[in-house]
Image (cartoon, rainbow, N blue to C red; front, side, top):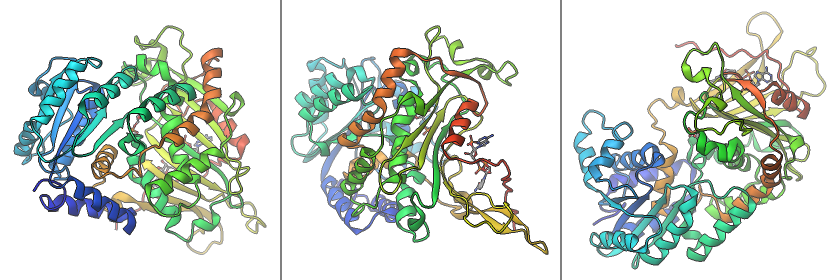
Amino acid sequence: MNGLDEGNPEGLELLRKSLKKVQIETELHEVEISSGDIADSSNIFVVFGASGDLARKKIYPTLWALFRDNLLPKDTKIFGYARSKFTVEQIREKCAGTVKAKPGEEEALDRFWQSNHYVAGSYDTKRDFEMLAQEMAGMEKGRNNRLFYLALPPSVFKPVTTMIKETCMADKGWTRVIVEKPFGKDSDSSADLSNHLQKLFSEDQLYRIDHYLGKEMVQNLISLRFGNMIFGPTWNRDSIASVIISFKEPFGTQGRGGYFDEFGIIRDVMQNHLLQILCLTAMEKPVTTSPDHIRDEKVKVLKAVQELTMDDVVLGQYQGDPEGEDEDSRLGYLDDKTVPAGSTCPTFAAAVLKIKNERWDGVPFILRCGKALNERKAEVRIQYRDVPGDIFNGQTARNELVIRVQPNESVYAKVMTKTPGMSFTLEETELDLTYKSRYKDARLPEAYERLILDVFVGSQMHFVRSDELAEAWRIFTPLLHKIDNDKPKPIPYKYGSRGPQEADDMAARSGFTYTGRYKWQEPAKL
Ligand code: NDP
Ligand code: BG6
């Protein structure tokens, strides 16, 4: 038997374990039905854009990890497709730095590459796609499930999906298409792409990937919020003063400037990754954890978010640090040869979003993201209000609950305690759930691993629905058009800094308080 159940019991057990963490009976049942679908079937995964960067950095390593851990349906065949005339051996060489075997895994790696095939063809020639279809058909028996991954520039999304529909649909099994961002550049272009896709495929065949939805701590937001009594009652405007959702990277665009310049940091990170985190932080409790109930709530909260204007944002662009330790940090965004001279593209943005509903009216949701900053970090920071009726002579600092997505996944709450010992002063400390101490042996799968597995089992919980996408673009489009047309000069900030001071000033004006008094001490080893 092929498939994820009988033929691959270890795989199903691992999958069950990972599902157990967050999903209730109903979804497990759904997944079991779907995994039943892939028993007795031929499963083919096609990577369009197999010669590209995304395929090398993310898709092939993910497929290898799933294969190695026995999580792919048995005998899954992988087809690379791109214009370059490569062989599987050449793709393997290209991926040598990203698809690697640890000692003892060499034989498995050979088997992995043996399950790979490659077809060279153009992205708009029917004959080439027919060739792909023919090659796939030659390897299939029984029900044929086909999964297509578009690791491609958006300029070819349309012809490729049209060709898939015309020539490559599974005739006896399911067809699923994974689309990578960017899903358009604004409301109109996104609607245009959505209309195109909806003419070809049904919503349950489309998987719009936002890889932040595959991250452990992003998925954990639902469990933390709705599985604990201590958070629910304070999760609102009465107790919370502000919410900051941050994404920081300590490197610049480095050779990727050509792509980046067309999009800028708002389209690259804020409109998708950070807004998805906002949805999970701010949405109401879904009726169940079924994918559509969750996505219904995400859409609902997005509908309550006001459109952004220039007054709500601070834009920045990094400059080289002449004293930087390495060459990269001495170069600014405009020194990147792939960036057009004089570009005003923002590499940093902070925006204050307002949610006009009963729970959040008056609470700023501050989204911050930037390249070439002082550290790598993604987190959600919930800052509570001042304690009313102070009896400690102003010694109390605001509580904060921080959900750190990366690196070093953790959840910590900053709380006030009595300084241990004879004194009766207060001090700020933390209740700390750091995953690597609490769950020493847990392997947290990469986001792409979880998401690709989800597509195999047919779970759309962690994928973006078309109405969600339309709402996300509604919020950002007027601002993006203003930036595209007026080209406001971004505030310069130094490579390796925390970004423009103006962003901190805007956060302070909006209701976030920074005291600078909190000092974290790593717990002593017992
Ligand atoms: P901080 O008080 O250092 O920072 C709190 C917030 O204030 C952050 O959003 C920070 O932004 C912002 N901030 C920093 N400097 C300024 C400034 N000058 N003006 C305005 N805002 C500012 O507390 P953290 O919660 O960040 O903790 C400090 C350190 O302790 C971190 O490195 C954290 O990882 C570590 N820690 C680790 C724990 C663990 O491993 N489990 C538990 C608790 C803390 P920005 O993000 O830009 O710095
Ligand atoms: C991508 C952005 O979507 O996410 C990149 O296009 C960014 O600019 C990346 O670097 C960050 O992903 P991660 O998983 O490394 O935080």
